[in-house]
Image (cartoon, rainbow, N blue to C red):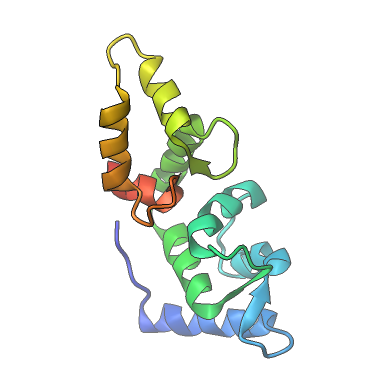
Length: 148
């Protein structure tokens, strides 16, 4: 699922970023992110963008830099139907809608199936392998890496 931007796409993304970087700080506010993506013909809901932003904007800043914007664009331009299906799968697990999966959310989904039962040790091992930043949660990109 890894993709890079072509030179033409890089230039276009950079130009649009500069348009929305009105004060020349090298950052654009999250409040205009949807408008910036619209200029690239990338249409996602604000709720979906917030899920994608969590692993990119770990400091929870009110704005993002060009590198973060490019990461978001790369994700959004991948096969749209696959991305939306994966997001729906992630949201199925994310019961409280906070954009990350806790052990209790994973345990609840897995143990709700009669065909599957996970004990605490197996769940700890699973998190040790999937939770790349070891923050105790699985974010959207860690989830994607896990199921890809």
